[in-house]
Image (cartoon, rainbow, N blue to C red; front, side):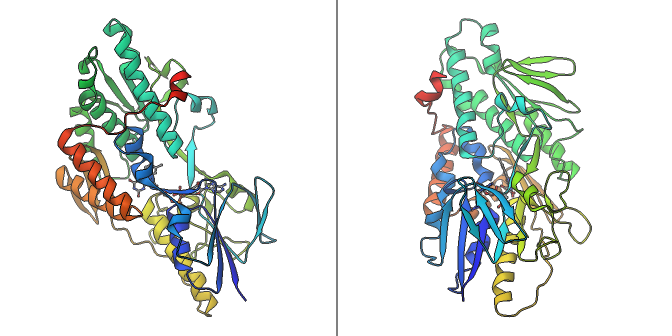
Length: 416
Ligand SMILES: Cc1cc2nc3c(=O)[nH]c(=O)nc-3n(C[C@H](O)[C@H](O)[C@H](O)COP(=O)(O)OP(=O)(O)OC[C@H]3O[C@@H](n4cnc5c(N)ncnc54)[C@H](O)[C@@H]3O)c2cc1C
């Protein structure tokens, strides 16, 4: 008899579960609403024209082409019947399971201001990254055609909302584009007229990092020409710009990197959720009403041994995926379940060219060495030799020439 395992999501968590289930006793299925596994930590480089979409994404089918007991279904899961062991896709298809692993990740949270989304896209998918890239490039083209610095000003202004790792990376990367590498191809723009704001409601950026590293990132951003506005809440976003408590920043270039909430499908399993919509899982990552349903990665709320919730980062999803895959494999052989333990190998964030910070088990690094480590680790975790090679080659080229490779505006969006 084969055991049917269904995995929702082909991200870090889902892929890592599936890799454990190579044995033919499992009939495994990955369901994803896209056909690719996406390396989200490098999305900002697609959004800022440093990398192409194909460099950081790989078809899920290609990842598992040799794993014959696994099939891939392209479809959006809309609900889960946890008591009757089946889930339903948007087109009405029902898929039954013996085990279900939910790894649908997270999405941006606009804190009830859904109208802001249209003018301030978040960075979560390849299409988000391409939308932001086009907006940045179109703004430069528009500014080039305008007669005076005053008229150009809104188009040379960029606002990134949220001072976490994604916001810092985006602001740093835009500063590199706007202050340095692309500007030299424009005849009518002066880099001194570009303005980049990073807006954060709290009193510091990169709050999960030790204070000294956050401060170092803050200083780096300042030197790169990013104005970091701390203790600053956004009160409105519209087509023409961003409203703060005491001023309006006029710009069409707004990027949202502020809040995260878990996937809405999690509410359909009727389990306790935290305030971000993540499922509160047991020590073995299963849910309370059905021990054969697991939730992992960004979708799960799990506290470490000190009672601190695990962060929504790739290593957590990878380790949880591997744990659940092994648990299912072990249970098929009669092994008892154990509790999940996260091994924290450290956290890193990059700010720009040769600038990053790293906190490796209390060992704090910043600057070039941290950036080099960041680069090597990201290359290592990319899936596929071709992608690793291409990203490495692009980075070397970019480092030597200061040139961004992928500055394409497709006809569709330039007509909008
Ligand atoms: C811009 C950005 C930068 C980041 N940088 C870093 C970093 O530097 N370091 C780090 O460690 N982490 C980083 N992260 C966080 C990291 O990417 C996540 O923690 C990780 O991807 C979580 O893995 P996951 O498997 O839980 O979800 P994901 O990798 O998000 O995968 C979820 C999958 O589920 C699919 N899915 C969602 N809903 C459905 C549905 N209803 N039906 C079918 N399929 C569905 C999605 O298409 C997706 O493929 C970053 C995230 C972002 C967005």
